[in-house]
Length: 116
Length: 113
Image 1 (tube, chains in turn red, blue):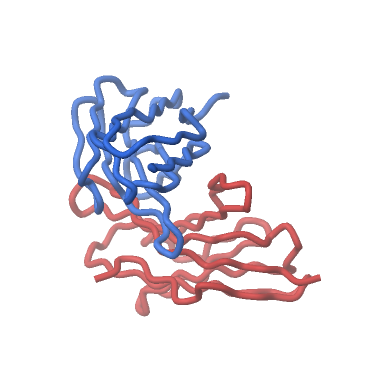
Image 2 (cartoon, helix red, strand yellow):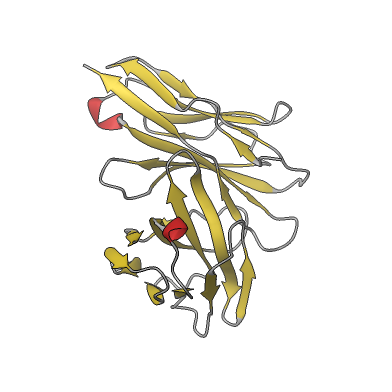
């Protein structure tokens, strides 16, 4: 079974609008971390935002926020006021603590295109 | 502030050749890992290490070997390259625990002909 599922291979959004990128996860562990990374066309991986499983508040970092719904096992990324520079591939990732290995597992990604 | 240094950036191999992708980090991170990125498949974990002398397999370990003799270095060896190993490879490091963000190398674009 997929640990991290990103169901949107591609998304379009108009500049200055908000967009939500979906991510669902599967774990039986109580302690885990959820992450989002951005990969622009240049190829590097850029960390955006982190949410811990015990955090009660949704994480926010500037224009990025993580809509964490624990019961539904979803961790959607919300980008407000989209900019042309937000066009990139976005990956959701999870770290579980159950085995003590803290493996990083990534989803298949969502390619976002911001339209002028 | 070097972070994670991954070399080479590009490599072309012939089928059957072997090579080593180098990865070094200067952040004293215990956790290091190797991924391959293929279109439509995201980043798939090849091998990882939670500290010097400790390595384990990820999702797609076949055809690859790793070792971790120091905290800083985590090389990935391709034993006998195959066209199916054509991919972009990323090395990453992080603190252990569920909250450590991953720091990535620049990636290696490998083509096996």
